[in-house]
Amino acid sequence: MKRLVILISTFLIASCCAEKPAPDLAIVPNPVSMVGGGKGVVLKEGAEPAVKTRIDKKLAEEEYVLDTRCGKVKITAGSEAGIFRGRQTLLQIVSQVREAGAGRIPGVLIKDKPAFAYRGAHLDCCRHFFTVDEVKRYIDLIAMHKINVFHWHLTDDQGWRAEIKSYPKLTEIGSVRAETIIGHQSQKDPKYDGTPHGGFYTQEEMRDVVKYAAERYITVIPEIEMPGHACAALASYPELGCRGADYPYKVETRWGIFPEVLCAGNPETVVFLEKVLDEICDIFPSEYIHIGGDEAPRSEWEKCPKCQALMKEKGYTREAELQSYLITTVEKYLAEKGRKIIGWDEILEGGVSQSATVMSWRGAKGGIAAAKMGNDVIMTPNSHFYLDYYQTADPAGNGEPLGIGRHLPLSKCYSFDPFDQLDESEKSHIKGIQANLWAEYIATFDHIEHMALPRMAALAEVAWSNENRTSYEDFVKRIETALLPIYESRGYNYSTYAFEGIE
Ligand code: ACM
Ligand code: ZN
Image (cartoon, rainbow, N blue to C red; front, side, top):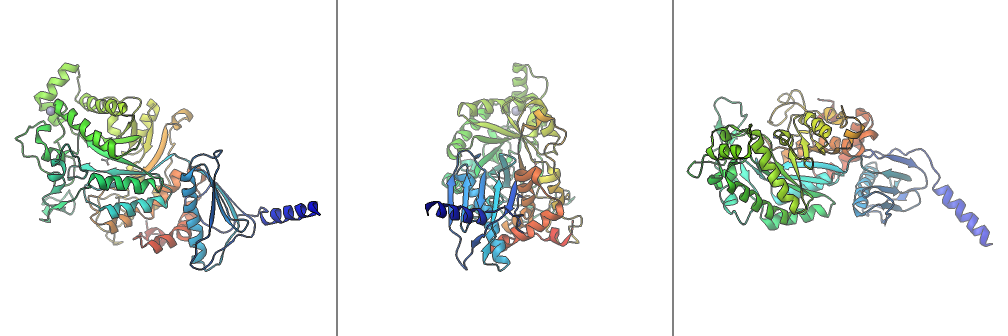
């Protein structure tokens, strides 16, 4: 009798979980594998399915298995982060089942894990300020795409946004600009809006954002720009610039690249950077701190007696070595605190230590060069992942809001090959992929959403799925089925060009 019961129950389990072809479910990013089978799970009106979760240490940290074959939803993962990623997949399944008016989640076994450990999304809160609630909305938006790093751009020429208690003028003075240029920086006769723009995050608010992100298994990497993009810092503490304390530095009101940079030859600059980073490290527990390093003209250093004296003392022959001196000094300081640096690809100029991670933004070439030198790399090429670029070739004709220029349709984002031109050993240095959202021309969070979606889905699929990507046509269909119901229910202002076939 006992044997008969075992036999019958084994038969029942086997038949309920018998493997069938994958049901017609769409998931973005595309999972490693999906097979159908079993009776699925009843989905009651207005109620979420009860989910049984289990940690299995044999799985990698973010790896998960989602099983709906036997009447219950089960998620097994290598850690709570993996459970959270699996829940994002379940959210897509539930949304599309409801959208289709069906009452049952099909039976499916999904096995999934990320291609890249670092999947980043950046947000510029300097050119335009976004509130803590908007930043959290951005974190929710990226979390649903299985992104695990939020790169928070906190300091720039047009505004310093992070409260630093030892340098209070950074936010008293540096967080407000007098007005903002209207239109494009190439305009011959620039027009200004005559309105001050400002805002900053208190340390308590930044801690709150870190916690909010951590609850979604997202690490916040703060960026403190040096030695360029420093006009707001210099307006606050002019003694840190090559032109000295009497020079009327101002928080910039235009967009662009400005010659005013931190004085590399002034020892107070290093004191300033270290004290700022002390407080930043206190707020942000991330292993990596982004130290900027991009677009720092050296014309002021060429003329500055302090910078020239330091070059002589160190035996430098090129001003680029001053940049390298500042970056490596800061890198050593952060290393004592157990932190590592990431910098934009300009940090390669003048020499960079092997332990620095290079963020390749001027196309992929900086990243390729860095990987060949043995440095770790995050690929965020403007050619494929600058989400402030226009989404169609005819922005005016297609009613796109005014933007910074250039053209980056969804299909181009999707086509990125992270390993192009790299051999096997070099490939191992590509640690991640990131999309950047600069906000010179993006004054509202509504516009941020329009630029981010659906291109964030392409970032997600390159960074999570990479070799498991499908055709572009299939990808667009999967976005429509799996993501649009969620975008709609959350009220995201996503763009529709790609769904209308407009590039
Ligand atoms: C950058 O876009 N200047 C990193
Ligand atoms: Zn100087």
